[in-house]
Length: 397
Image (cartoon, rainbow, N blue to C red; front, top):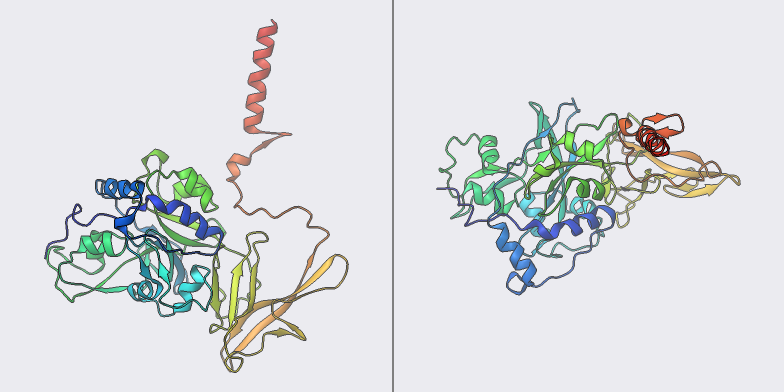
């Protein structure tokens, strides 16, 4: 069976994605119904037709060189062409937990599986990542069953929205001839991912499909990273070479926590704009973009007979108390154990309110080379000052 030609199975038109992705990163997802493709606006239809002629781009493997123990958690941004449901998305990516899909998109745990996902909206998929040979890919899942009339190209660019290429699927499944696949054949989909830190900072790597008209500057700003980091991570030397449909490795900053090194979830990483269920779903942890501290509370709706008490003495997990005019005490989550019995660990942390007058910075620190100081001036300010001084002296003379 021959892979479907690009003109017959176009990539998804990602031109509408930029606003949705920015919204997903900063606020909870808010899906709303949209008209079917036949009722789209003229602009949407124009962008859809234009996408038919976009050149194919390779979804380069994400570098993963660190010796991360076991697997880490990564994210991809899946953009369906047609309206679907959360249950269908879960089935396509074979997510073991429906709650993990809700958590990755900051949706209420009461959200049903038949919840409508509009066409051209972004759904974040959280999955385990494994590193081997200097690159990362999804660990084991998803596995896709080939349907009648499908080729590897149609599966890669259509079903999985360009997150992979048919060459990568063929390599992951040892398919020597991509023209020969059988109906009903089970094939692994190698979603791109990484477990590497950025410098000494732990991050969650997010696979972002570039929208038409996007720029390195806009993407870096939307996801709270730097242009330099984004370009180095993806091997981009010229920002003008960015192409629509290209899959970028975007590092999402994560919150620090008080989880101990002996806890079973000691490597838990939570980016802004999402939450994670841990400790056998008993604890819900989110990331605050104002303090960049992980906030954990008992998961609502989970039976107390299943989850042990999470308290610091008489104080419940997540609660605070004022010990003085300046000091604030918080009952923090510090992990869980399951060696002899399932136990949720907590500790009391004290923070000073009086020495924290400045607002926390919500973006990662700039590259150190751009922050070089020269006395009271930055390096660039010093150069400009010298040039202006020489110009004035020349004019005076």
